Length: 123
Image 1 (cartoon, one colour):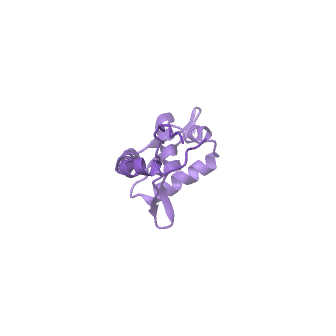
Image 2 (cartoon, rainbow, N blue to C red; image 1 turned 120 degrees about the vertical axis):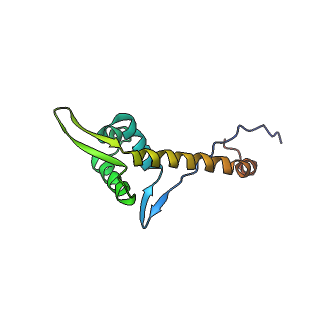
Image 3 (cartoon, rainbow, N blue to C red; image 1 turned 90 degrees about the vertical axis):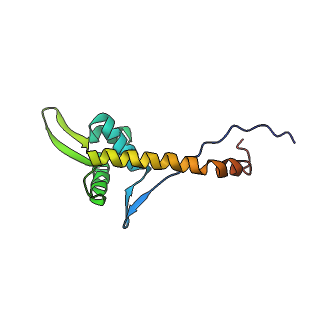
């Protein structure tokens, strides 16, 4: 049997942080925070993620409830609409989460390299 050298497969751990029964932070909420930080708009972030504004707003409410300080503040709009702003706490939480993901990937690499050799090739 001809064994071809396989291209390394990516590894993508999915970290979820719980506060009681609530998911305080996870991949979807981190994506929402990232898009809010980039756009300054919860409605735009929700549209980009193909979710309703109400669902995005509820996710923000859960995150804000789970931390000592809010991660996102909302300002009602006038003629140009409102805006959403990541607080200093929100920016710090986002950076820490991303650092945890990177550290997790780095820690998993030796085992992941060995595990890939045990996987059947994807045709």
